[in-house]
View 1: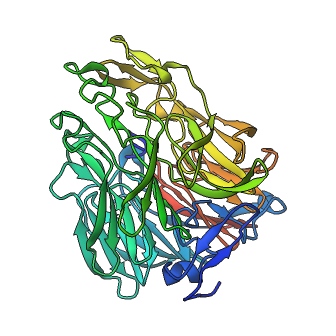
View 2 (view 1 turned 60 degrees about the vertical axis):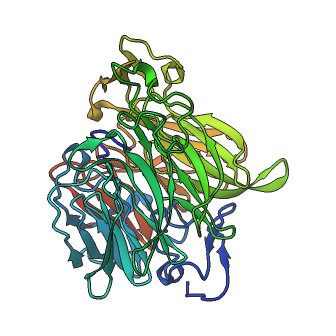
Length: 521
């Protein structure tokens, strides 16, 4: 999730485990360890991907195929926060709890917006000097909002007084930043750093992403997990960097396991002195991996590295999805992961073993090269390609968007995108989660930078050109489209009859709300 575009989850039940089924095959897990806001407003959108399983599936909404043709604007909330091609609202997901929408812009400003009217209720402005590149956003829990500020600090804001409660710098004077929307669970806020800083750039030598469990009450670091297994960055800390998580983890609240997808190693593919990644020989663990960690102490339960020695910036960064599906006649707990290599994986949740792999989008074969030639070659999926934005899941099917935009690489380094971002194409694929077989595909004329979101019998997709589309999620038939006031590189939240979508690219950046029979501005 890097480059010029992207930088660019009922009543409170206090003492028992509550497991509800949003749709067949979706296990949405909450319990006494969940923040009261997540328990109380489970039917809203209290977590970045709706629930701890990461399904991005809203089945309590009144929006569906019967009224989607009438979906129109209810309100628009303007946001101006710079960010260049990344826009004012990049990679953030609004949260909705009890009639309030929470969203963070690229200047790390937190807005509380009335869901019914779109009016600002209050805001918190840390007055940072320069915009982030995203993805960033808030987490909500225990009367506080937790959010990354200025790429370095995790900050807690009191939801009643709107004042800062604590501020924890997670960079520790290292060349790293924080670009992630955190998740709150069991008294802990889960976040990560990535290689690079706001002022000096990305993939600085010595920058290694770290996963953190932060105490929600005081901001103390309860545990950390270095996503680079090698303490000296594979022998060349003066050159190499990598790892970290760009998107929120999924949490199995029954087992207490937190699942993370990690970023790529660098430099990619290499430098003049160390072409083709020779400064980081071997597998470059734990980059491009799915990690399963104990949520209490951060200890590693298992990992599976899907792309050893990645030379092409192919992060495995997408938030994992937890599901239970019948495999060979027996219900099996799985975790689904994906990333910029354009491959979607089904893993056994207990062991990490791969059950199936499915390719999405265009592949020209160069993405599988073990040796990078000296002369530039076009690689597809490129650095801005494959699966860039979140997946969704319902009824045994995972919905995956993809981006098709080649990148030129030579052995000594990155050259350029082939064409420009606005000319890229995308698509959406529906994949059976038990077998990995494709149920349907649809091509899109613009990059699918708005993720996938299930709403009842629909799946919504947003593209970089500002178009929002709804498909029948069983057949893939397109049912509706809407031209937003700005380009899209963030993903929506849904509560009741309202779809809330940040549209952050261009001069009319705004958070918009769409409702059946909406006739607003």
